[in-house]
Image (cartoon, rainbow, N blue to C red; front, side, top):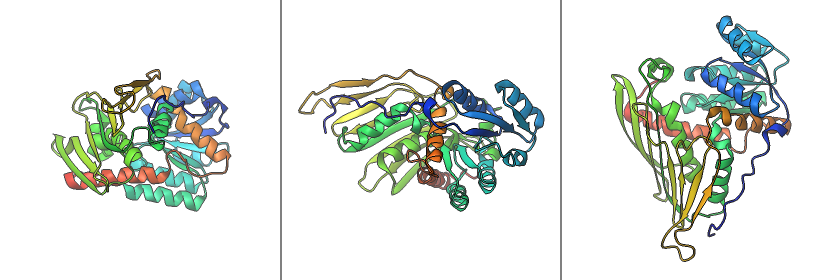
Length: 345
């Protein structure tokens, strides 16, 4: 199918999603951005926050006018006025925090990564099945309107057979940042590298081989990774992530008929172009542009939340856009990269 016009995003209006009552576990930076996104763009109600430090929880509640602040996660999970919990603690805590919430009968949306490894992600999936509750990973990029357009192009075969994905995500961090803490699953792989891996998975599905190279930032802590993922047909995803420097953070999806160039940062709201190959028999070199106002986390985190709200209201327990098996496959690739490079958490 030759692409002559771009489809419109099918993303529902976030303000029309059924309203759930949310509790926040972990009042860190990403939790602030999440609540900001919900309050600015949806009718979701954030009603409580919990931290092991009541002072931090109270400050967070005051900043966002939340009715309740708790000094323990258990108190929040015992609150009958909470439908769903957003897990925003440090990476190594995601598994246990999510399972505890599910065992308490709460639905959960876990900030990415779902866990530090695929075994932890499987444990969350098993707990969700036992509890018959929704569990999802807030891989917010997958829920953005522009990614719905990309999925339509791929599903319609508008690019022709796709042979290559090229994606990178690099940000400079100073040594005082959490990402330098090996005890908190530091390094770029989980914080940054999961975005390129998730994009590659969206395009190709599973991979039969992974070849990775890395460089340490400091002794014992990885600083950057390059990896080539190959599927059964030999198609390749060339991925890079670093915390040592700022990089374009752009992405390319190259098909036989047309190529998508996603402006950086590719994982945030923003535009992309589709260019017909010069050798194509019709409209060679034709360029189509998808325009979306560039944004940051506060402009997009809410889409994953309202997707969860719709699924739960409909009696479902898993997102169709980003089901748990997608998060698990991303972490399986990350596990293999860590195995090859000797990265341990």
